[in-house]
Length: 314
Image 1 (spheres, rainbow, N blue to C red):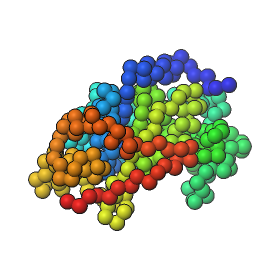
Image 2: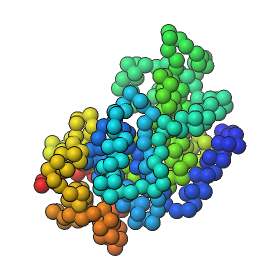
Image 3: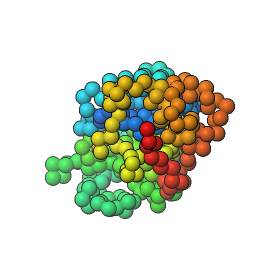
Image 4: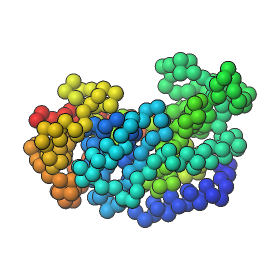
């Protein structure tokens, strides 16, 4: 038997289903841990183009649950960058931090009905472990403090997920709602029909599908696009201090030049093109196959074809 949800949570899921039935709904979900780099922005552009070519909605969700990673001013910065590039979103943007009550309600039901168990394995114990071996799965259900530390909450996954991802953490030991839990619930509640994101996130599909399966729902379609890499082949990342739009704006580049450069790096337009996001959208209306060819599906293990791209020479 599946999970038995109370009426108010069923209402949330039904609302998401109703939104899905209205048509395409995509989203972009950055973490405000610093300025968006060009790889983030290229992914946002592709996600936006996909939604607009489908005459659908494009939502903006800010993944701000992990407060230790948040950098002051990052939300305002990413909003400004998206607007400058002409990537308009539909409706107000969503903060995950304002939705903690929703995630906690689902978690409480899962825990009461035995879908979760406490896990006290440390990161050191699991170093190098790709699939959680179920160390704490059959131990006593001790949810309280031990050595001044609370346990993480893990989901008892079922096949085929037990062999592809293992039991997933839905609530961390420090009390922060797990990434997979919040993301999966938002895809359902917001009625997302397709997720277009970087290929480095293909490996998380199985974990998020496992959560969605637990509540008896169907997953959105997951599509993954090429990563933008530096000249050495290393993907751009905030951790490596990859640059964003500010240096380009300081050099006097217009938004049309940046859009053209990002699109040309994927072969959507010729090198040296300068055009707005709306002009690019119109260019692709008769050549949608160009965009479709860049969006790869992940198999059950998270593998997909190599789509890595390097920053083109200027």
